[in-house]
Image (tube, rainbow, N blue to C red; front, side, top):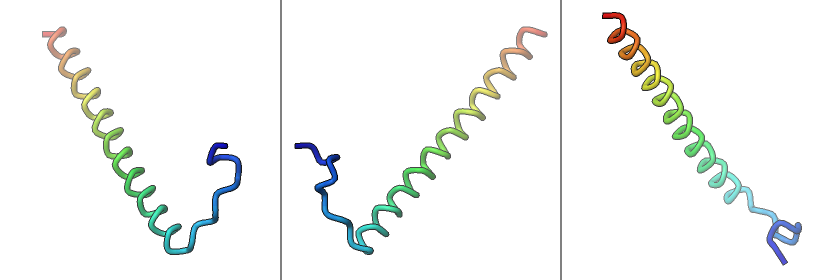
Length: 54
């Protein structure tokens, strides 16, 4: 059987805090990467538009 069938034991409060801290860390990294990509695409677009206007 798979682990997703509900037979898994509940996490202790300490384990849950560690798990949530890891989730927050991953979310912060993903938000940072997304922000970096948005800024990168903005600057690439800006440079391409300015080079075609000149």
